Amino acid sequence: MAHYKSIVHIGTHKTGTTSIQNFLWQRREWLRDHGYAFYQGMHIGDNHAELHASAMRAHRNSPFRHVTKLLCDQAYKDDVRRRVDEFAAANEENRLIFSAEGLSYLRYEDEFDWLAGLMPAPVLIVVYLRNRVDFLRSYKGEMEKHGLSGSDCRDSVAYTNEDTWLLDYDERLTPFRERFGCDHVVSIDYDDAVEREVSVIPSFLRVLGLCEHVTEEETRIFLNRSPR
Image (cartoon, rainbow, N blue to C red; front, side, top):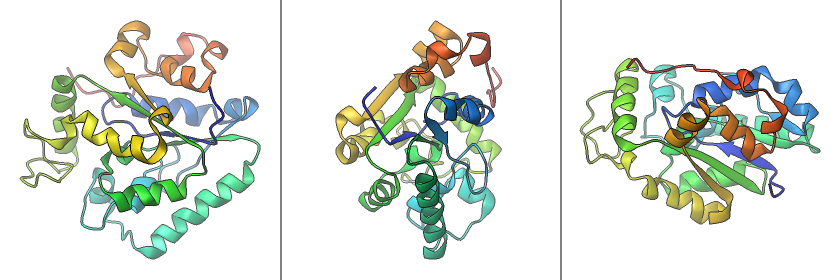
């Protein structure tokens, strides 16, 4: 893998993100031994939700924003920047890992401006994409769980009709490619990863160049699974 300073895992939702985050959080010291540092979130240790909460426009919602009712004003944004800067300064010799599926909600230029300015460069974006039928079914259940189902606003993250923008993967990823570079966005097929290796964790560790350092059993973590 080319030398990236920041590896930013942006989900998407319902693609094993919670399992990846838990794996990385539980093995923080192991990651340090291999030259990586996993950021500790402000609100949730292993899910860096403040990254998308500080980036998204004030009028936009997300499950995290909806549940916490946070005031994501300039003071909040400054606090997020300070924490990320301190983390980077404390890990000058390490590559930095961030994970927040809410980052896949970013849509607007100013939102990407914020993310690009926040992450120490060069940045590698890692995204998982699931077949659209299963994704939408599972995602609808997630929105219902958070009390966000049934939105008629096409810009909303809770708009889950068949024509939702959430299913236009090219549209969602194009701004990341334009901002960070096409070669700096790695897209992984969630269904293929699970079919081949049961868990998504090996595919993520392969991006880091660490897959050979763990056993198959260690990577079999299944969290926040939707009922079938």
